[in-house]
Image (cartoon, rainbow, N blue to C red; front, top):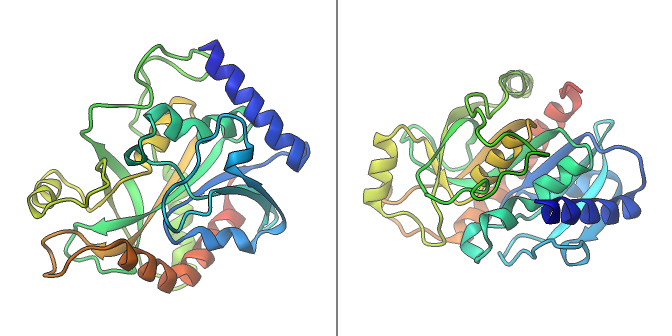
Amino acid sequence: MENLNEKMQEAAMYITSRIGDEPVLVGMVLGSGLGDLAEQLEKRIYISYKDIPFFPVSTVFGHKGRLVVGILEGKRVMCMQGRFHYYEGYGMDQVVFPIQVMHAMGIDNLLVTNAAGGVNTSFKPGDLMLITDHIKLIADSPMRGPNNDKLGSRFFDMTNTYDKTLMDIARKEAASLSLKVQEGVYMFFSGPSYETPAEIRVARTLGSDAVGMSTVPEAIAASHMRMKVLGISCITNMAAGILDQPLSHEEVMETSEKVKTEFASLIRGITRSWPL
């Protein structure tokens, strides 16, 4: 575990050398098609993932593969324009390494976003969904292996992974924007293939409202380190078998593009009200 701590510190020191010592208050992971929010930051500083020690590199179309640090609604934030996925061939430990680096930099607040498939048939493409909980049936975990006691306990509680106070703030900000926001359970699939209609029926039976290939590993790692987490999904398409049409990444990107203004307005309001 000393090796992980050393890697975290080296990556954190490099980022700090680029952005200065002023603390970053909120970390944000921007999912497929949602990365344009980072371009609204003031006093932006860009850092390519390939320049950060031990960082993986994004391989997914639509993920720019860089950190953007700047000011949003008066708060200094760090945005990940693109994340890392298990399906890219990275281990779970690599997927969550940026979150651990954020923690090493003193960031205790995390916003995770994603593009997701709608399982709840009352949802429609373009909806935003607050993640109230998640389901992970995949055996692998970012916390598998020897525990890093400097980060958190071997066995840790996941009851309140998604912070209730932050969800209340999100609801209030959505209401102030007259924006209807759905709420539900996000189920993690490993990808990269989309789920089958049978898998979606199982997901619905188990209580899932949306499905996707990200977010959950990061939320687990953040919970391990006792970070406050808010999760928001953009429902970019209805999941397999609900509509009689094929699924594609192009549809994901097109829907994300259509909702990016509403998404940005909501995130700005949440950031403005984020309790620190």
